[in-house]
Image (cartoon, chains in turn yellow, orange, brown, purple):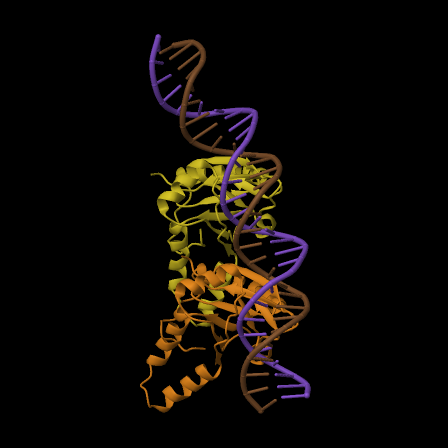
Length: 156
Length: 156
DNA sequence: TGGGATAACATGGGATTTCATGGGAGGTCA
DNA sequence: TGACCTCCCATGAAATCCCATGTTATCCCA
């Protein structure tokens, strides 16, 4: 399975719910995580979302520090404090929380963008801009003008 | 399960009680600990809280020193002396003790912040400040500017 | 290959449950 | 006897469940 692929835009209803794209739900089901794990992206107006795979990435970052130390506490607050685990209802929908609205600027529509091991939640217009920008960078990278950074880059 | 995730702010009632967020109660129930284990954080104006998982971490710290030694005694007094095990009532509430008020500055509202294996109890305003600070540190840590301390580092 | 039958899916809304919060009554300890 | 602590019930708001509907994509058979 290719993971979370492609992008979709769905409407928010009067109760603040959106349908998660069916293909993304299928990936989540295979991953085995109950519900959805969401965390505000530290470097863009998007929210990262996924299941156990995404959670494992974050846990790995935390495990580099010993528990009960100031470093571990600070990192855990920064990561888990900016996280949420909304439930997915029987129809495959989640409610968009205030935290997500604030961080993304979402009002009445939501764009879901697949990134393989996770997907992102965007306000549609901002996603369009971000995507155009990303396309430029991708072109530069694929043409060899940018050298891959060593692992240890920022989260996500 | 991701453990204690996200953060919530609840109001203290006239009797000094607060509701523990339902999602945190669910984690505690799964953990199997009866009640709640609380210990003042040694490095911030917060109180660490959790169940068996937190208790095990503390025990591990203690086990690094041989029993019957002055070091072990001192650490045990420091740790357990700053601890409490408040009861959780039938509605999922606990009474905020004087020790917690003194250590956190809580007056009429309480913020619960998830850190995975434990959660912290904060005075809302102090939590906001601490979180902003933690976000900065996290960025530095994740970008590799801070070297992870080896497990077994000081309790700080 | 065309086109109708079927299934999947996003969306809307009513009904129900959960949850945080407030307050009363009985019990306990000093 | 009075302050405090449990246990229990009440309530309003918010979250969740469940069913309905229209539209689009998929399937199937001639």
